[in-house]
Length: 460
View 1 (cartoon, rainbow, N blue to C red):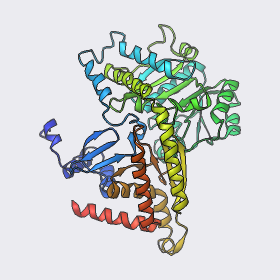
View 2: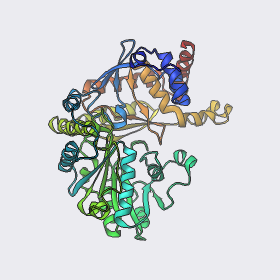
View 3: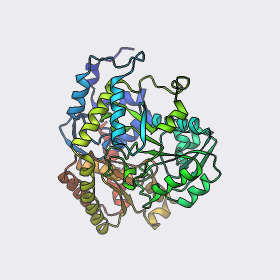
View 4: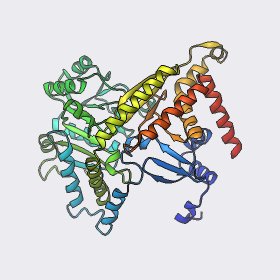
């Protein structure tokens, strides 16, 4: 088999990319994206915009699932990485100065009491680190998590993720777990009351669950209950962190300090893979304090110099440009526009979120002759694919990139880079208005998408 050079790969056309991806990476995903005409060949990205190989410009409202708070290819992050390209990137026989510096800066912007950092490469790894630390520091085994939550797809993270579709094929997972409804303080107290819980892991806003915002005071109550019953509060800020919701970290809205906080996505500036946990002095010392325990949990690439430099630059940009405040003001503007759109179009069931982490949920079709003829297939397809059909129309008709949430495919997420302009937000609102005016029902959306599917087939 002949090897491809980087130059060869840069010259691949869309069909060649699709074929190689299907053959050697993931055939099902390649087929799914190509049917919806999602497998476009993007060749350039800057800020909130990307361009395909035909010169078309798109606005990115997906934002790397929260990884692109700074936008694509932020020049200051790239410059920071390039400035240290002569430094050792991975050298375990030393203490990494860049890891030390980033840990200091994270502690400076984090909720009160969070001090020690452990660096990894992804959100799922951060969650695994948090679960292990909770067990070793408390001596307890049980974890409590929320229905509809999403914390990752590795074994430990999947064990505390609340969607059966992702859990069932890999069971048995961790055995000592308890599930509670998100936002239900009474149920949480029942789960914590036996006193055997190592940690309660929770998202401040459920991202993949469909952008679900809990009742006011929920995190503060969770903090009080965890302290009362001797469990650690683990807050997953992987998607909500670094300004996304209008605060540097979403839990700061209620002035809540967790025992462990999970970070990733934007931590690497949208350039480098980077994950981390932050924890308190007490929890760290009980878990990994002293020379005997300091190497019980490690990561080869975690804390590498390039990722740490990207993290240092990222925090500097977030603070200097006050991106949390930008997210708050733009988010309020965006939310009000979307609420007005909901009042106009019956297909929109709900608009919710905080800052620039918003979700648009759609109404399902009511019975009808078509549903009866298809023995309920229309309702089933709608519940699973309406979000992807709308996202397909947005990218193909209006050049706007978005996607549905993993646990609730009936919701499309709107998570643009925090540098998005109000003019960009208006483009999205106007596109949705035009789409739902011309296609006011699920059937009309489905028929339009069917044309796209057949069109993409005949293009091959």
